[in-house]
Length: 335
Image (cartoon, rainbow, N blue to C red; front, side, top):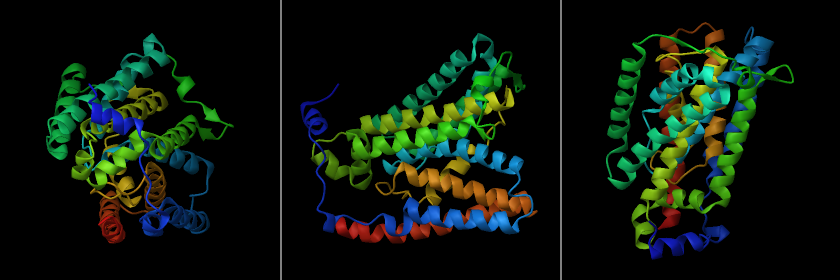
């Protein structure tokens, strides 16, 4: 139920600071700067990395970036709300892929709906615990991941589930070259950007991440927004899992196992502060493209998986330091 004070907050537009008092979020961590770096790396890869510019490699790159990007865009809302990360997203992706494949005989749209509903339900459960019961988000989502994977293991016996039906509606190519997942990724990013910029939910999520105590004093309850962020994140993770199953025609517990970690890297590299209140979903989308591009380049350059992990870890540490440095002037401007 909505209290009278909360209703007033919902009905009243969130006031904007004068332009001179607004912190500059674009100087070091905005999608424009990250996009410029990504564009330069893309050109360099086309010129110097053998096999990068081939049609097959570019298609694989766009498919990987799109699926991870969908997960990262949803995760960005949790991070901006000051709840750090969700560590259950890999489990949600894998289980949603299994649900899609297991129910494909009912039709691709029904299978998709069931998978997405599962993601929304898991997001709701975790959001209630974190937002309303005030449990630790890291511990809660680790526990949720264990429960989800455990139940999926019991149901499937750890076996690979092959879809019995036609999922081609979700595995088509746009203009004969781009996977449908690319269009879905762009649509999800645009919708999240509009939600962040023009809706009360998007603006109040940022306010809660900036200063939750001040928001509470103003009569703004944080838990409904935290629950909403978790629901959106779970839904998008499940959407990515279902699209992955539609592309591969199967589902198992290892499918998309790295998506949760990759999404976290994308969010951090995109310049979204782990303390909350800084960044927007577009940052996460651009970060996903940058991370996917770098990973693809490293593979083609012959680096081992271990070397790639080290590189990603260093990249995250650098991004955290840069984001922290850019957040200090913003914090000073809020005092």
